[in-house]
Length: 331
Ligand SMILES: NC(=O)c1ccc[n+]([C@@H]2O[C@H](COP(=O)([O-])OP(=O)(O)OC[C@H]3O[C@@H](n4cnc5c(N)ncnc54)[C@H](O)[C@@H]3O)[C@@H](O)[C@H]2O)c1
Image 1: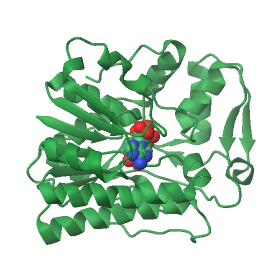
Image 2 (image 1 turned 30 degrees about the vertical axis):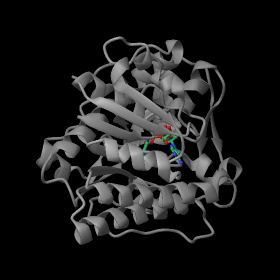
Image 3 (image 1 turned 120 degrees about the horizontal axis):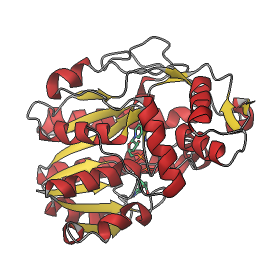
């Protein structure tokens, strides 16, 4: 099969590329390298078993010409390219909205033109400020005011979901929506606000581990290979189009506990310091206190289980940052 992965040089995209290549697919990537990196693909580009089936275009999804040709060529499209990360969104508000709304609309319009199956990577951020758990796909959505720019990412991704569902209803486009919760693993960068790689690099450098707010906010973390297997299974399932699926872990942990676990697992002497949100992100930020997915829907369709526990996930990120080589396989 010929697979197009937008954002394929990014964190999740590069793992998805690896899995598709090892399945025997041809993989076509378009990525503008804004947050992704060719280094994420280096081992695949030098692997004789797969390198002849990997084709990379460095360009933006906002440019019609390369996208038109790539979607025309490929059988299915995983649309992962997006402006991602709290810090990146706050620092690049306009460009982020353009990529996340216009870019996705373009992908969907061209997938519709060629009638290609497409999976859109959405996010748990679309749920907004809920305190209850678990969050299920039919829950209402609660956002803060438009002056708080962090909600622009959630609102843009929600618009992507509406657009995909509208193409499905109006034109029968086989579009699938995956709402990813915090996904972690080797090759993720902490530069744009992702918590685990940031804490691990601080701990390994014996620098203070900086917890934003009081650290009582909770998250779940899913290992990237578990997520990749779910994305591939959804793409292949005949009943997935026109539906929204949570993909996430179920082990809820506070950010303070996470910092303590990372300190222990790295044997670090780093102190844990608390930084007010306003100092970390400015006045346009507010946090979500809790984010735990309900996964009954995806479990019953494809048998999804987040099999990799937090300790193992942290181990893999620590090892990756120490030597940049180890990418553990899920059972
Ligand atoms: N990592 C997570 O925890 C998480 C959670 C929820 C949703 N997601 C979604 O998963 C997808 C992948 O995220 P990731 O964590 O791998 O982040 P990432 O930043 O590593 O990947 C995004 C990729 O898109 C590329 N890109 C950005 N704008 C582009 C453009 N205009 N044209 C072409 N390429 C462009 C970037 O260079 C990067 O390689 C995103 O759509 C994101 O919203 C991720």
